Amino acid sequence: MKIETIRRNLVLKELEIKETPQGKQIVFSIKFVKKDGELIFMPRAVATGLKMNIKENRMRGVLPVDENENACGHVTPVSIDSLIEYNGIKVRM
Image (cartoon, rainbow, N blue to C red; front, side, top):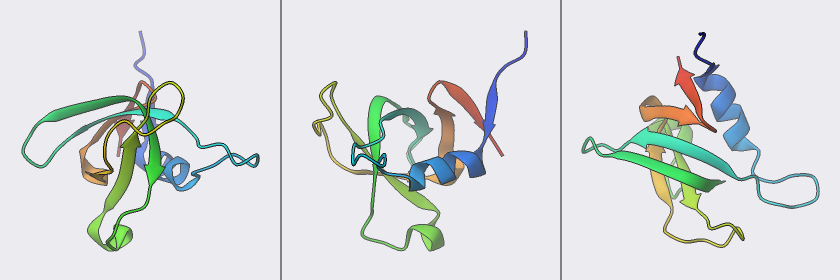
């Protein structure tokens, strides 16, 4: 059985696309490790901006949402080096 993987650069390209052409937010699931080692899984999230240079700091912002796409938490900065899964697919370099 082959494990499905996705390259990190493709995940980052998908995170840059925040809306569909119709203006609807793109929802995805994501799993990553925080700086303190805590494993975080967000079954539904949307990409957001951060109040920092995201390219220089190698970070992306994600916001958890409910089934109606309403925010149900706060914006979380995610290091691109800590990504583990994106939409249930293992992230690789």
